[in-house]
Amino acid sequence: MKCLCDGDDMIMTTQGRGPEPRASGTRERIITAAERLFAERGVVAVSNRQISEAAGQGNNTAVSYHFGSKEELVRAVLRRHAEPIERARRRRLGEAGASADARDWIGCLVHPVTEHLAELGAPSWFARFGAQLMTDPGLRAIMVSEALTTPSLGEVLDGLNRCAPDLPLEVHIERGEMAGQLIIHTCADRERRLARGATTARTDWHGTAVGLVDAITGLWLAPATPADRAERPARAYAAERTGGDDDGGGREWG
Amino acid sequence: MKCLCDGDDMIMTTQGRGPEPRASGTRERIITAAERLFAERGVVAVSNRQISEAAGQGNNTAVSYHFGSKEELVRAVLRRHAEPIERARRRRLGEAGASADARDWIGCLVHPVTEHLAELGAPSWFARFGAQLMTDPGLRAIMVSEALTTPSLGEVLDGLNRCAPDLPLEVHIERGEMAGQLIIHTCADRERRLARGATTARTDWHGTAVGLVDAITGLWLAPATPADRAERPARAYAAERTGGDDDGGGREWG
DNA sequence: GTCTGGGTCAATCACTTGACTTAATCTTGG
DNA sequence: CCAAGATTAAGTCAAGTGATTGACCCAGAC
Image (cartoon, rainbow over all chains, first blue to last red; front, side, top):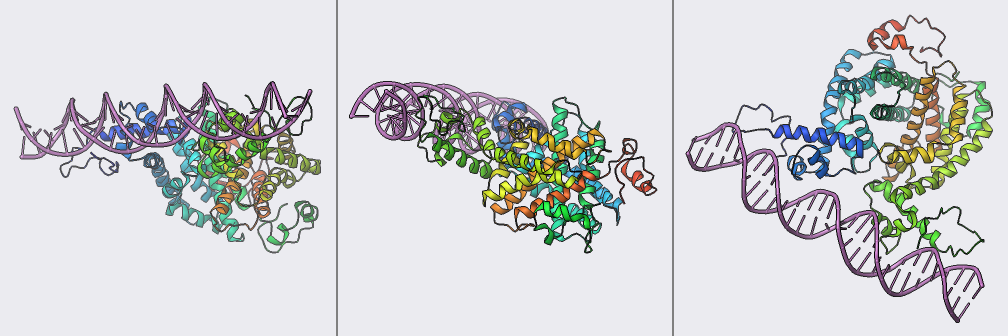
């Protein structure tokens, strides 16, 4: 009468009385169908019925039976991708060691994502799906708890912070979030273009990754306007700024 | 029997047979209610009925009557904010003149948005609303046609491109879109925090603007990895890169 | 072979939604 | 003031939704 099994844990368990059957196949088909529909029509706009139907289930109860709710289905879709990305990030984290080069740490953020999207082949749907989760008031919490709250991400941010020790803590945090937004939405952008067959600036995902690492590195190492100067209107600051004494902040605009 | 008037054009028209009445007041109340509900519950998740009710209309047809469809209502909400932002951008564009400083042009992108949000006071809903439009497959086109296709934006991008003439065109385009994503989603982020009473990195919207201009300037002026090097895996590139001959690109990573 | 229980199916439920209809109310020009 | 048309209220309707129910199917246990 109930399933709601964790899916991952139940595969190939030789123990016990389990007839764990074709259900896992259905589960996967539902996740696959949902992912596509979510990206193409919008997570909120797609009904559980449509997902069940697209997954080849004559039954409208399929989502409810296997996942309990749409929120849990969203979690499952997200986990399917977040886990390999997390593994790749952890692997890269080991290689980065104690690098003092911001590029290495930023690479730990960017490449696991772009390489995963490259592996998915075209068309992929995950990036658009993830971008929706980030902006929907009801779904954002799922994204945060399921994919953005992981120790490896924290370690990357720590390593990154050591590369620009002069920046205020607030700016570190601010720019870390900017980097995240940039990765998610730039990938979603490229995925959208690929999906509608448009021309893309970069020929492949690796090119996109390089562009992202370049951009985020620039963003990260940019000098931060000191708070006392930030108070003045931008024009006055711009007019005077060329004088250029600096009080030990990051490097200066040149 | 029909309304669907353009709203802006009908105010104070002394001409003709028009009894254009309190309707415009209702229109505004609907737009205001919709904006709030869209941001708090999600554009797709909110029904026209809920909007009508929240606007104090006993009638569930109010949205349909005044706007024809939810899409048109979304357009109206968007226009309400896009127009003052556009005016401010145009004003700033005049001040920027022919500046060769990327900061000035980036300021033309950032400040009109943040200043508008500051004027709205707290809580505001527009930034979250806009972020949703950017990621929803059905609504993105509205955002593009209504707010991102404007000559002033093109002029800013042109001015910006003249500040980094060595970058390939593709990278210009890529980074222009990155800047847009960064502005929208960083503002939405701050607005979310404000809405739930959380602490924010920056004390006010002007601080957020300064942080954005700093970050985007860094992003914009960052050197682009040449295509021939981009082909190699990142680690090999990182190991060799310190040698540092450069073939006329932007400034080098230091 | 029978039994058991997980998985699937078909039917039904109360509910919400957008569109529509009709009547009441307001606004304005004459 | 009054008629005409715009606006609002109130009620109805078919379609679609998530949830529930009980019957059916089938692989393995006994």
